[in-house]
Every structure is written in C-alpha cells, then in structure tokens.
Image (cartoon, rainbow, N blue to C red):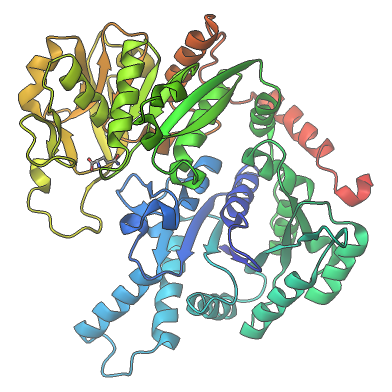
Amino acid sequence: MKYIFVTGGVVSSLGKGLTAAALGTLLENRGLKVALQKFDPYLNVDPGTMSPTQHGEVYVLDDGAETDLDLGHYERFTSTKLTRRNSTTSGQVYQEVLNNERAGTYLGKTVQVIPHVTDEIQRRILQLATDSKVDVVITEIGGTVGDIEGLPFLEAIREFALDVGPGNVCFIHVTYVPFIKAAGELKTKPTQQSVAKLREIGITPHLLVCRCEQPLNKELRSKLSLFCNVPYEAVIEEKDVEHSIYEVPLMLQRERLDDLVCKYFQIVAPPANMFQWQEVIRRLVAPQHRVRVGVVGKYTGLADAYKSVHEALVHAGIASDCRVQIEPIDAEEVEKADGLELLKGLGGILVPGGFGNRGIEGKIRAARYARENEIPYLGLCLGMQVATIEFARNILGLKSANSTEFDELTPDPVIHLQETQRHVKRKGGSMRLGAQESAIREGTLTRRIYDAALVSERHRHRYEFNNLYRERFEARGFVISATTPDDQLVEIIELKDHPFFVASQFHPEFQSKPTKPHPLFVGFITAAHQRQHHTPLVPIIAPPISAPTAAENRAGAVAARISTRPVDAAQ
Ligand code: GLN
C-alpha cells in the first residue's frame, strides 16, 4: 500500500482538491486502484451546518455523509464511490477522542493532541487503506501550511510516514508562484517560505506542484528545486486552465506527475490511457452547439455554492457537443417589477436547492415564467418545491399556498415537513440524507429520459410534497412521475402540456460526471437547445463517450504519450 499526502501552501483556494482528484484520474487510468480522502481542519463535525457563503456547496454521498465539495471532484474525476470514511474533520477527530476519554479508553492518561489526536488521525488513514483495498491512498489535507488548526494533521502524517517506512509515502506540496505585474516576473519566495514551514514541521515534500498564471521557465524550476530541496524534475507546473477544470489531468500528465509518483513508489504501470478525457476536452473546447441557461439562486456571486449543479450542466453539454453558457440569476432581482426581463432569451431555467425565505418569491416567479412560456425547467429539491407552490397558486387557485418552511400558517401547505422530521431538534446530520430509491411511473417523460423503472438518487431535505393534495394536482396535468417505491414520498414531478418541465426532490447533480452525464441534465440541455435554436440537438450520444475498444485503447495510449512529452524536452 502506498500513500500520497497533498498539502497546500501560500494561499487557500489553490485547487488542491482538483490536483488530488486529477492525480487520482491519472493513476486510475494507469490501471491502479485509488482511494481519495479529505481531512478538513475546522471544528464543525461536517459542513452540513455551514452556510454556503462560508464553505460553498455541501456535497452529499450515497451513505448520507455531508461533505466538502472537494469530495465532488474526487467522484467526478475517478470511479471511486465515496463514503463518510473518505471525509474527516477535526470536529470528528476530537469528538471520537473525547468519547474515548469518557469511556475510559485512555486508562487514566492525560489526553493530548500528541499522541491521542494524532493517533486518531492516523487510525482513519489506515482504516480507509484497509477497507478499500487499493494500491494508492491519496489524502488531501485541507487548509494551508501555517494554519494553527492544520498542525495536528501535519504532525500525524509526519509520524505516519515514519511508521510505514521510506518509499511508501509521497508528500506533494501544492503551492503558488505569483506573477508580479510591476516586476513582470514570477516570484518563488512565497513557495520557498511555505516549504521551509513544512520542513520545520518535519515534512520534506517529494514533489512540488506550482500553481501559476505564467509558465515556469528552466531558471525558475532550478531555483525552486534548489531552495525547496526537491529534484529539478519534481517541480511540476500547474498553470491556470484555459477552458475547463477537466484539462487538469491532461496538463499534469504532460508534466509527468503520475510518472514521477510511479517512479518514486517503484510501481510499474503502463502510461495512463486518457482517451476519454481527451474527447471530453475536445468537446469542451470546440463544441458544435451553444445554449444559454439561467440558474435562479441566492448565491449568484459565489460559483462554489452551486458547484455540482454547474458541473452537471457542463457534463450534459459534453454529452450533446454543446457549450452551456450558465447565467447566474439572483432570485431577489427576479422579484422586482422588471425582474422577468432577466429571464428573457434563455434556453432553459434551473432552480437549484436551497434553504430559507430569501428570494423564494423570485424562484416561484421564475417557475411560473418557465411554465407559461414553455421554457424548459429543471427544478432540484427546493426547485421542485417552488414549482409545486407555483402550480398550486396559479393553476389550482390556492392563492396562499406555500411550504411550511416559509409560512408556517399557510392555509394550503402543499409542501410540508416530512413526518419523520417532526420531532427532530438537532440541526446537524438530521435531514433525509443520501441515496434512496425512486420508482418511475410508466408513460412519463421522466421514464423516457431515465430509461429505467427504478433509480437511486441522493437527497438532502426536510420538507416534502403534501400527499393530501396529490389528486387535485394530478387532475390538472401535474404529473407525479416518480415516488419512493412505497409510494409515500413524491420524488419527481413533470407537467403534461409542456416541452420539458421536470423537477426532483433529490439532487441528481451529485451523480453526474464528465464521462457519465446525468440523464435529467442531458434531457434539460437538449430541450433548452431546442427552445433556443428551434432545432433538435442531434446526435445525442448515449452513453455520451463510449468506452474505447482494445484497439482504441492502444491508440489512445500512444496518442497520450505523444502529447505528453515533458515540457522541457519540447522547448
Ligand atoms: N429547504 C428545503 C427542504 O429542506 C429544500 C432543501 C434543498 O433544496 N436541499 O426540504
């Protein structure tokens, strides 16, 4: 078993998660089995209770774990299915240690950060390694070297490296090499200092991944190598991508990151076959079609808040050779007198998940506009609930219909708290969470889109469609196209006389990948294109990017090799 630890230096938001995920892609495509794990140094037990403004989206796993959005990258970039074992926070570590202390596990000892907290961290690395039976475990340490909260994690991985012995642990430090405009130069000093800080703790990186806006020349690479104590070839350039984050694996392959890792571990594996990813990039860079869709939400200035939704839209575009231009639309702006102007000319309207009152009337208005003007609509969780409220008010004539989340005393609670939520007091981890099955009704658009009778999707909500209203809705063309297999909970709705109005109580975005786009998103983008350009989007290739044949595999491997010569050799 081999272990890679990814740390970050100089500034946050460097894309450590992406780098770790992209390395996972490369190693997997060399035929290795990989597990990815994230350590987050904050004290929240999980990000489920944090505001999106603090943390970006909460990414939900099959087992219901509410995790950091980097876990989304891990699942989109690799074939691993993650569970709560793949995500650890300081909060969880301390909670475990304190529970042990109360249980008397430490036999009267003074409980300390070293060794008790650090041991618990190491236990979690080993446990993942043992349970997942992979060749390589990649562990990303959240935060930046120098943060007080991160110290126990760094100390733990230092000790861990000692325990498992040299040659089994590879430290990768992702750092920033800024371009100073006034000097017209890239500067290495912040990286030197960050590595010095890491070495003070007792960790010497084996590989340095340098995030930069400009390419690193030979002189800079030599300087970084000398001052940071890494071999010249271990200085890896990771320039800002031009088109898409899905270029990162190919970029790191060109820099030979995976070759260096394999060489370090003495793993013999064929070059990564990046056939599929090259095709993904081709379609992203030069697609034949274009479509513009609006995402009506609350956090328009914060792309990370709807990360998986944005990615899933892009993936659907990849499936259809179509560039998806995403317009973030502030729901509160839609509430204003001329708010509908913002929705004009869009191919489709998407209302994503959310909590709380703010902007809710704007979202309801957007759903109405989509319904009345036959604009394709995709509602996700809250997006399904607002579509329900809108239909109740404007078609069923229940003028004050609402969700009890927004109006507890509404006479028509068409959306209300789930039975199982009535007595829930604690906020953390207490929603209906994770993968649940939905049975799809025959003869519906939803059934045609999924081409399946039973699907499993991830949930994160407290409120649900109120079953007392089912008949009244269905009598007016509001189709309940999927429910839980016991028919108790409405899972998907669609509208009869509309080209594409589909909304789900779950979050399909969490299961979409660039190489495996989600059918609901593909259906939405296809309909949106039809709406915007009045031409069908053909061909839709499903599955979007077919797995290469053995012969293509070989050709792909060769092509990958040719296009991945080290930059130095190419210069
Ligand atoms: N606030 C709604 C609920 O709790 C919707 C949740 C969501 O969109 N994730 O049911």
